[in-house]
Image (cartoon, rainbow, N blue to C red; front, side, top):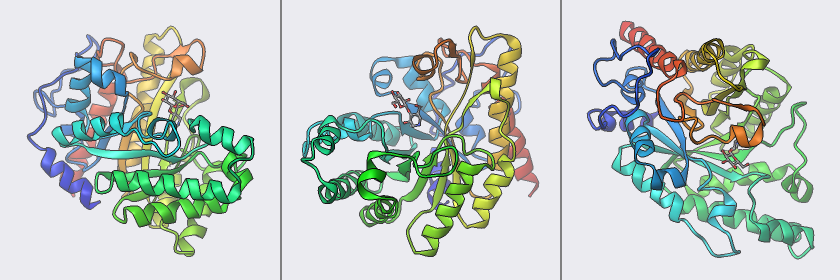
Length: 363
Ligand code: 9MR
């Protein structure tokens, strides 16, 4: 919590001019004052409001850059800190994209979320092929994992307020996901990863992270039980990252508040880490209204509990989104359109932050 408060104090007054366009349907920034952006509105409820950042867009697209800096107080590398990017050849690191993001964040008084140290996706080819052909055995793989975590967390030591240490380790039914890590090392890779990350940067808050864990269900309960067990064993696990990749056709997940509350009761932090709300294209007014409601409900759930410390959208413009590439016929999942014009979802978040600020003012 300390870094969150400090960062917001520093950020006050350091925000660039309003960068995102206002859609015809979006209300002007009345209550928050002229030029209010999400990050200024989030100061009063003391919430870090973040976005995933696309490294190429950051380098090439000036309006995109202006949106990242003016609207957000936290950034997450969408891909630039993943293993295949930072260690494309064994033992040879390329931190250039990630370093540029961290430097951008400094310039704009933003915090950085680290994503992600251990995952089954976006692993370097030398690693997966080494395991497949037997040249990397289980002991060798454990050493490789330890080196990766230690080197990466050390490289960014002091720069990262929350690390997604392990990503997507459970299936929907709450059993461990079958992955190279589980097959080769067994489930102890999870506690090892947290211990190694903590040794490398004792101040960073260390998170589990997954999708479909918004509400109370078999998967989120598996995380709850795992976190309880690891913490009882003294393993440094401090938070649950809830990705928040929603789709309006499935309805809003139930029990989000209850789910967050049970992690609060364990003394853990929570964070929404990758929010987007997709729909079947084309978008229309009703779908956009439903999308706005989903964003707002996640925000309200977050500000209602003590431990929910940051709220991150997985990109803020439909111009750069993983959704259409993955779900054919779907998209429009972000809070501004391809031209950075605010959608109802943007207004819903701004209104939610204003309401939270009013409530905070009464306490
Ligand atoms: O948004 C990311 C996309 O650019 C990558 O191609 C993709 C590769 O798997 O990963 C996307 O981000 C994922 C995140 O790292 C973990 N949770 C799910 C996200 C969406 O797939």
